[in-house]
Length: 326
Image 1: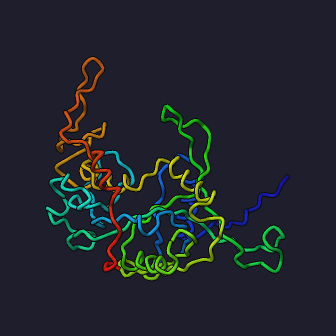
Image 2: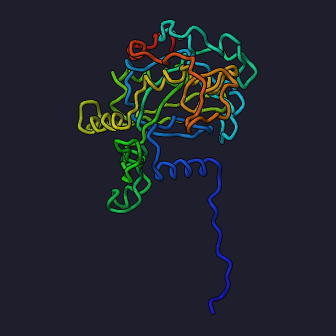
Image 3: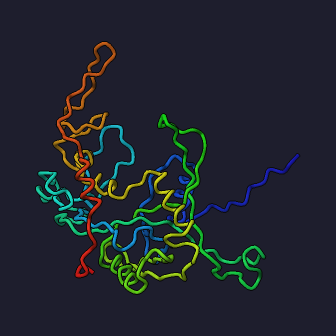
C-alpha cells in the first residue's frame, strides 16, 4: 500500500500577490472587453506602461472622487461603497445637463468633506513588463542573469463576440489596455515635463512607482530607453491602435458615461432608479411587473437620451490642460 503522507503545503501569501493573481486569472479566463484602470494600491508598488494618448490629446474634466454610493439594489453583489463621477456641470457638456446631484446637494465624500469637483486627466496606455535574463541563452545567457534585457506587453485573453453579441467560443489575445485617470499634480505634471523634454510621451515606456499612502501620494516616473520599432507610425503602433478599435474602446465615451443620467441614477441619486431596460425612472417605480399576455407592464422612461451626437463631438474636442495647472 502507498503510505498515507501529509503533503508539503506552500500556500501563496500576501494581499497584493493575491490581487495580482486574481487579475491575471480573470484576464486569462476571458469575457472582458473593457480596459482595466491603472492602479497602484500600495506604497512602492510599480508598473510599466506605454502611453497611447499623447500630451495634446489628454482629456480633462471636473470630477468628483470618493463619492459614497446609495444602498445596493436588492440582489446586487459586490456593490461599491464609493465611486468616481464626472461633474455634470463640466464645460464639456455645454449645459446639456441642468443639474449635478453631487454639487447641488453638497454630498460629502468618504473623508467627511464636501465632494467638490477637481480637474482630473484621462489617457489610454498599454501595460508592459520588464524582462530580466534568467541565465538561459534565449534570454541573454549567463552574463545577463538578473539584468533587464527588454520590455514586453502584458496580454489579455478575451472572448470573441459574434454578430449576435454572444461569445463565439474563440479567444482573442490583446495587449493589456489601461485607463489612466489621475490628477495633474503628482502624476500628469511629471509626464508633462517629460513631454517638454522629448516632444512626446509615446516613444518610450515609463516605470511608475507609487510614493506614499492614502491621499498623500505622488508618483515617481522614470523613462526607459526607447525601442525604435515601437513608436507612433510603426507597424507595432498600428497594431496597438487596431486593438483599441477592435475592443470598441473610446476614451471620450468612457468619460461621458460617468456623467450620464443612468450613471447618476444608478449610483448616487436616491430619487431615481434604473429599470431593467436601462431607463431612468422615479425611485420606487421599478416594482415586480404585472404581466398581461406574457408582456411586462413597465413604467415609461422619463429621461432624455444621455449623450447626443453633437455633445459627443464637443467632448472629443476637449483641449489641452493649461500649463498653469502643472
